[in-house]
Length: 183
Image (cartoon, rainbow, N blue to C red; front, side, top):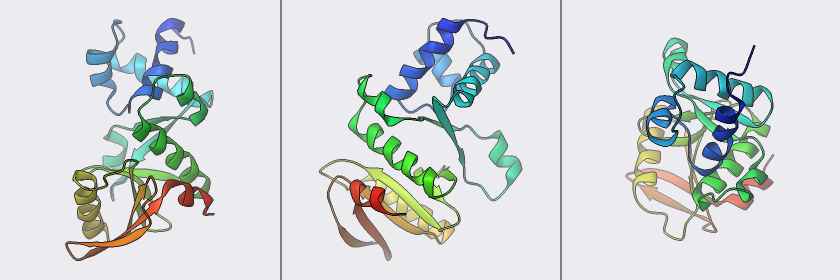
């Protein structure tokens, strides 16, 4: 296969490192200023994945057909790239968590309510909130997804280590560094 424009494809790597890349169409319209269509950008993302520069995460759904049609989340394969580009701390932490999770098993993500990482074999939900304040929407969506799936919810934090009961669901708060030590 032929890359139509190497500069277009090369532009995708910093975009993925700096911001979560879920919807190719949105990225084309809002972030990129070139005239590539959806199929071309999707093909470029495939090339980057085959080159081990990025990795895609599929959404967790009970239906394989729905999973194929949904947008994929895209992460930098080696989170060291996040030091080259001005990346938000939360995205750096999520990339580190994703890269560690893929060593355990194939990670997915949960869409609606949004949860960053789903490990099916372990029946675990992982939401990354790498900040001092771990309240808010992330916890609500994690609890909602846990109720829907029956999976064990974990909130990966900067340094909080505790168990919280939210709406009758026990959520384990674990520092990201501790998660990275698990095998």
